[in-house]
Amino acid sequence: MTKKHPKLASKFMIGAAINLYGKTKFVKKAQLSGGDAFKRLKPPYVVVANHAGFADVGGLIMSMYPNCASFVISVTQMVQWPSGIKYMGILPKKQFTVDTSLIRDIQYVLSKGRPVVIYPEAKLSVVGTPNPIKPAIAKLVRLLKVPLVTVRFNGNYLYSPRWTKSTHKVPVRMDVKLAVSPEEVGKLSVEEIHRRILDDLACDDYAYQLENNIHIEDPHLVEGLENILYKCPCCGEEFAITAHGNELKCGKCGMSVTQNSLGQLVGGKFDKVVDWYNWQAQCVQQEVSAPDYRYQGNFRAEKLVGKKYADMGDATIVHDANGITATFADQNVHYKAGTFYTLSFNNDYVYLPTADAVYRFRRQNCVGCTTKLNLAVERQTALLEANK
Image 1 (cartoon, one colour):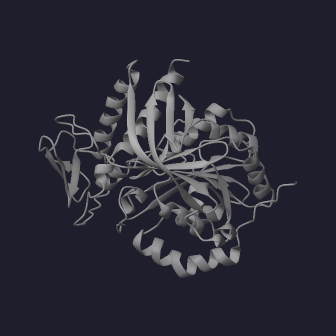
Image 2: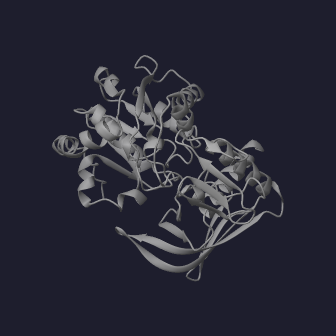
Image 3: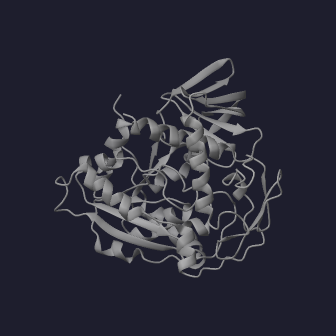
């Protein structure tokens, strides 16, 4: 049976959403700026942007209008939205998997003179800096043979950090750049396109905050950050960090650090969230490099069925030199080492797709274990690629 073409974004619905919601949400609270460059660009083209929250989605929609783009999004995100989302220009994809039908959908949208937006990190920024971006996105851009526009958002992570449900009133700036011009399409190498994407999307929101003297006053400033900064830099204990107000504290040794309104950590080994996180990554790399490395965690398995997740019972996830093995409901789902270059995860869940299904696993304990598992997968894959 012939596959149906994707629905193009409805200009009426996009316009209504901007008038009813976008102007208040993104112009006033996120203080969005820098999107005027889109008025000088004529589609079709592909947009690649960094991703830290919903403000970059709304920001792109508003800035590109009346040109209405189709957005490549994860099927795990679609289940959170009403069915009407399909009229907003959605191209669903199972994360970290090869999907040739998606390429055909993208080509169809471009053939209709519409832009396509892709977030090459495939998930939200963890600490306000880019996640790994693979060369595959550059191969796709070269294949599509249309101009490439890069959009870097600064401040979006500060506006809505992935580890908290709160938002902050901060200036969010868009840097829009024609990265591959119509004259360069089909001429540049994959390596050059990839380099330009990496350069254009390089960012650090905490550095942006400090450089622009952006003060964030919030009585619950770091609550939730213990899900990301899970390892004590003083005693080395994992999953013992707690957060209250603006203070992070180790439940084992008593180490205490506060975050000020400029995003700086005070009183501890690191004065930047990014440095603490990168130190954790180095520790994990040492672990996965050992021949006897093994992580095991207790989770609750769920399988995406239609628009809901069905409970599959208790699960155990083991990560070792062979990869990831999830055991639940009398079955083993195995992903060999190198299958994923990064994981889709949040404070409570790790998402693991297969060719036939999407599973998510809810942690049963150990605040921060989803972050560690993601780091372990990223470092293991990087080591495997380095040793090829």
